[in-house]
Image (cartoon, rainbow, N blue to C red; front, top):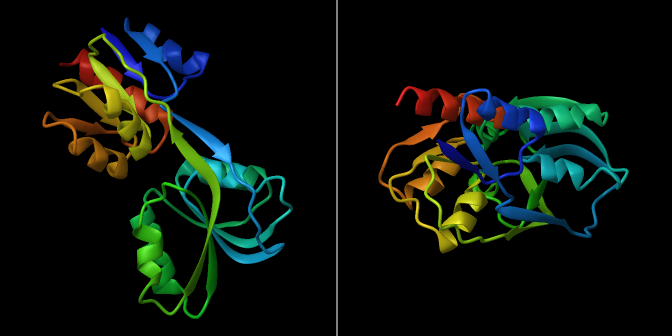
Length: 216
């Protein structure tokens, strides 16, 4: 069996496939370009939905009192860089529900990319809180044409799905997604079952693919 990963994997992550008797081909379906942006030096409430958003502020000396984030890896990166994470949820919809239920008349800064989803901005439109949106990085689609057929494809973001499907069809390939938002994008391009990882980590996507394909 041969699996395609739309994100470059570490040697340790590749070994998980090799130890299961599977081949894996990996490439980056998207590339990230950090943007120059202006932000206050002191931010009371900051929202991060990706590790790239966190990386975009590391050299800016921005002091954030309360960080709110999506995903365990995003939380880990924030904490490794001295940020106080007040709340982490696996999905943006869950995070916005927490914020709107627990805060009023507060200002939040949303550090995000140019392809960010609408969940967070939409949740502030009729709330008593104020959102300032800062585009801190740009996601470019690295579209590559593949002639090979895959037993499974791993996707880690909606942008990754969009990039792959520009020049390729998903057909009846088994698709493994890091979360619900990525799966929703994949559903636009495929009718066969889509498998969602148990956790929003690369390792969880790999584990889901191995277990599913070996038992298929």
